[in-house]
Image (cartoon, rainbow, N blue to C red; front, side, top):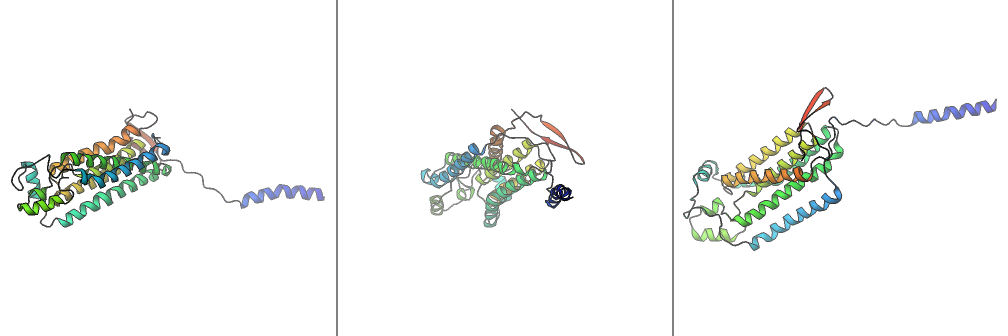
Length: 288
């Protein structure tokens, strides 16, 4: 009888122990099909660090290396410029340029990088693919820094005088302004290059991943870029052609970094239809 009781206890106790164990939630399946991009922290980590250090370092020494004269020079008289830039300057420049100038810095160095990172994370999490978010943000940062470095080099080469400096009629006041840094950094518009670079990089990564929120990432980024372009003209820091070139350069450079260096490891069609809970999700992607 004792032997039977012991045997029964041995059979019952493991069952009770298993009943007391906390139940683990089953891992949620991704809503959209995961698309692996070419990304390796061992390579991309140092690359991102090098881009950041090079961009900041070049910005610190650039002004000491530049000549104090224009290479892209507008009209001889104060404020003389081509008809297109003159029209936009007359229409958009504010009487008090300070608020617009401050707003442009908030957009370019606050809203643009924060929204690019936040929307990249949101797009990944919304598809139950949060493990991809850190790599996505790193790829967006690579595109942003590459765009910033490009504009710094171009500004140092083109040396176009800023609108408000070119409009100064008093030669002494103008010489004093030129003695300050940045008087010949009008082309291309650096703030605009940066915002469009981040917008294109984040949008390209989201599209290549096949996230459902990829259109939102593109729209939000480009909206911030357009707002930045407006504020730079309103602040009289750039001409319209400066901002137009900045938008083009930022979009090309920012989008090219993920497109060429982080494209999907497996080939995918241009348009992907993926079944999801409650319907079908369509996403666009590219491979070479």
